Image (cartoon, rainbow, N blue to C red; front, side, top):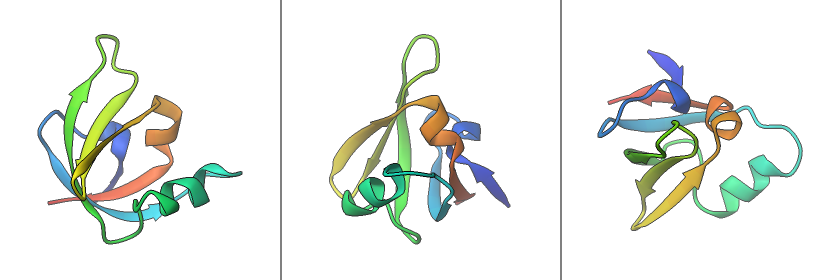
Length: 76
């Protein structure tokens, strides 16, 4: 089932399916290694839910809510 990263819960793992970001964000995420097929785990949410921290390929990345909405993922 395809959902956005913003729909995942704490501790949930998923695989990136597509990046629906416009502008320079999609290439930036790709350069960081967040490409289709990448598996990650949701590690933390800020107190108000924005940003969300994910862990993949040995490092952690924080994404704002609007960035997380544009990342289409598949739950594992």
